[in-house]
Length: 377
Length: 159
Image 1: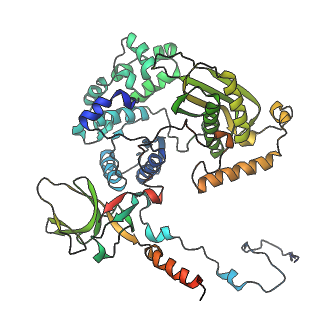
Image 2 (image 1 turned 180 degrees about the horizontal axis):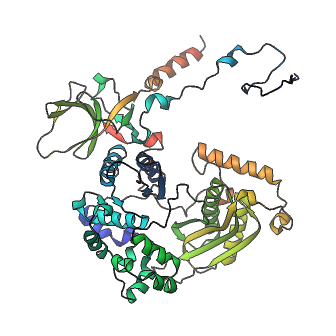
């Protein structure tokens, strides 16, 4: 996916390439606007990722390609983002059509498979590698290729029974989708995440256990914030550390996890557990570049069990949980109203030398009055 | 102050509306009958939410249009640009605020200050109208802040 900037210094200098650190708040805002504009074209829309969505165009009176062109123009004009649109009878075909539109400038950003003849369609599918089909990927793709299935069209013609016995239901569904039978419905509501992960490279690689614990505290707090936003509680917590795999240094990639006897979304509890795990898996003599905190086994908060035998709570008598829930609500409210990190766990430290370097960050054009874009009059 | 609730039993459904107000034993606030939501500036300033951005103006080339240095412009990208609109435009890769003039296809960008020249589109130069300026937010207090400080100091000083 990404290439570290110091690997391509020469290219940057030669072509005067501008590069920026990521500003996720800005991307999120632009994404929200883009999705809202696309929502003007159909009452049924699924946000698939930060920059992709599915629209249901069935029942519309205009030709899908006309709607798509107007959609592209409007997103471009209102939000400023260039887009490509793929149209098909199923989500898999729409994804495929989108990739074709992106690679074929003559299509002017729109590829409507439903408007093509069977032969034209087959030709396009023959041009796509099987691994590029949505839901197949590199691993399954390699297995399919060894059976002579090279392209998306080969997969479309693959025997369903054989697919069922050799690959299972996921591949069967994909084949049916390639044949134009929709097997995956629109997911209009964002499903609650089953796992939440917060991981980041340190700005400064470190062996200092205190610094690492500070970083783990911060990542845990962020993940806990996300967990509460979806009103969930988690029953398992995992912490991982990583040394730099690209460097010739002693490697250590430890992972530790703990099952919580009582699921929770309480930042303070989760932080104290995460830090304990970190201290257990850390070893002297390794320079770590990254930490990862992951919550799994997530359920809606209504499933919270009664506290009966909770080791954690017995060792450190906790305040009544209702009071703690109010504390968390206040924490989130403060950090929403002012900026994130206004109120935080003190063990996350103050200097934070491990903070990700983002010195070339795109300004917060849409979320800070002090960073508005400037125009000369 | 105690609260009383009078309940009268009547046959059939009771029609009415719940009102968020306590009934103290005193004179009721006559304003309760007139409660409305308070004004939201966004309603006034923003017509197309997804297409609206805020831009900081810098410089003095638009003072005839009452756009001053450091004013905040509300810019709507969804509007079709017409002759006479104030626009944010990208000219050769730079953002600028000017009046858009289109007389029979002859496109110009006009400043609002005689000290500055008009920008005429020559061959090869590229003009992109980024958005139409719909409102200008001017901080009236800040501009006079130094003068205010002086006046306040004078007020506080012993006579």
